[in-house]
Image (tube, helix red, strand yellow):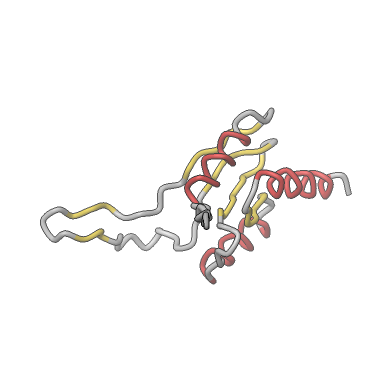
Length: 121
């Protein structure tokens, strides 16, 4: 009996596909937003910032699309969005930016079209 092990989709792989797609779009500049802390070798831990301006929940991908801030929270098919991540998405949208959760290139394509459609109103 041949059992095929299903390869688990990693968030990092989805991010890379989305960044590749986004950076070939006209009028778009996107990058990976690194959110991990700085590693403290002496203590053997990642240090969190004490900076009062640091924001929790900032999206994985940030960029500019047609002159607007772009924020994409990348998730695997079963990944969940935290409260802080949703709060960040909501705030970007309130301020006129484009922000959403995406699990695939087709979702990004659809969401960007939806946001651009909304500009015509």
